[in-house]
Structures are given as C-alpha cells and as structure tokens.
Image (cartoon, rainbow, N blue to C red; front, side, top):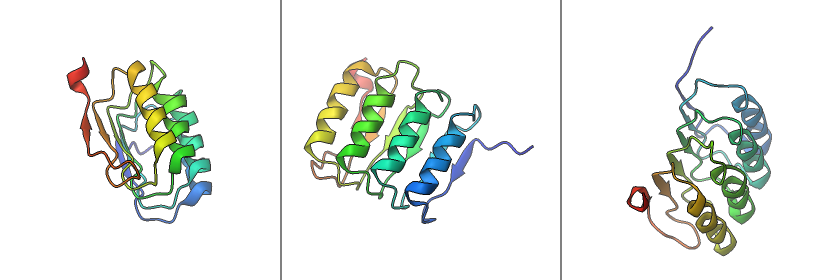
Length: 139
C-alpha cells in the first residue's frame, strides 16, 4: 500500500464533487500531512465537506485551498466546524483569493480566539484583503 504524506491536486478541475470525495477520504486518512487542492473551482459546498472531515482528522498540518470560490459560506464552514475544534491539527491554512468578505472575516476572528494551533493563515487577495498573518505571537 502506498503512503503519501504530501498530495497535490492543484489545477485539476475538481469542483465541489471532487472536494466531497476528498472530504470523505480525509476522514479516514491518518497519514496525510499536507494537501494542496488550490485552483480547482471548489465552492462552499465542497469546502463544507472538507471542513466536516477536518473535525475528525487531526493529522493534516497544512491545507492549501487558494484560488477557489469558497466565498463567505465556505470560510464560515471551515472556521466554525474545524478551527474551533480543539483537536484541529492544522498549523497552516491558505485561503488566498477566494472571495472571502466581511462574514468570512468575522468567522475567522471568532475561530482564532479558540484555536491555539494555527500558526500561518494566508488570506491575501480576498475582499477584506489582509496579508499573511503569523499567529504564533498570540501564544
């Protein structure tokens, strides 16, 4: 059996249907540490499934979801379902260029008060447009 610690599916036209399949697989994968699914036109529905999977998967350390169409609904799902979870393993999350606006920014702020593990969050090129944020100063 092959074991992957890093898997890149960037620029593969995965869309929401593919993200749902990835979310299902993530629930049962204790080995994967880095997943890049950027540039795949994943929307809020696919993001919701990824978020659901990350509530049970605490071994994924880095998730790259840049240049998708997550919008506020998807970012709220990621932050409410996952980053508020004390078992969340993510240390790096890239959500750059996803159309995340005010509601998403509020969800991010609320979740970060409860998350002590996330160290790097990239929100570049979103509607609210903050740059990469290093969170280790809050510890």
